[in-house]
Image (cartoon, rainbow, N blue to C red):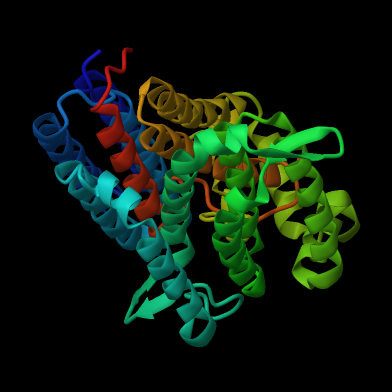
Length: 416
């Protein structure tokens, strides 16, 4: 199926969404104008991608634009003052996607300069320890400020770390499967092959933990274990990683007040429903109020949830659109991830295959962490919902990931 038809359907959905919001809140131009920017990005993006990557996957770009347009609608409703900012970041992310598409050799650069790029990303992350900022004026200082613009280096590091792991594992994949040592009943790759990658990954995670960016640290850990499993083919490593994650969670519970608070809220939010657990409780109420079909666009009161436009935007989706709308959002993300994994399976080159898988898994794990946190299946981690949540750094990184997946898909025949 050509890309233009899914993109047209996405455009109809986004336009109707914004018109309905404008009518519901009696705010016409202030709500509808982002659709013009979105439409321009969609149309010009499709035209340029036809030139740069004619054999690309036909669903990745439309799904990314669909989710972003949906997110713009929610932000225009929940925090109107942030609409201009998020729309500007849409343009920046869209430009980054096209830049990657126009220079497909960037994939080769990620492999060739893996250490240089990872050290550069880690250096930016380390800068936040000394000169970091927080746009809200409180909380962990995880951003670098450039005037009125803030960027979170851990988002860039996410892509660079996946590329580093893909490159290293691809170079040592055969040796990892042959040269193993026995640990209790299991055969695991020799430490001599894992030591360099463990060191680089460990430094990234330690810095994130030091900054108390524990959600991103968890994301890095899970993606690392999944990519290690894909490279080695040993399920025992996944089981061992799960045990380590549980032990690390227990240690973090004892060491960090913020982790202890989130675990306590997850375990029993009703004990402090009016104070510490107010955010989670209101999120659960929003899901209940939404029911099956939702309150309707612009209806309900998701705005009473603190930081609903960022960490809890999934609750706003559920209240406006109900369970069916929430499942639709989940389905769009699932299709994105599945298409990415299909690309990974069809690529013959080990590095490109692991890169496609790692980027897809990063989107999947991040989505799972925030959605399960909002639903109180797992403790909150504080990561964003890709494409939908407010946040320029996250949106830029998500579009960059889609750009890389489009480049990789252009190298293989990806059927409908």
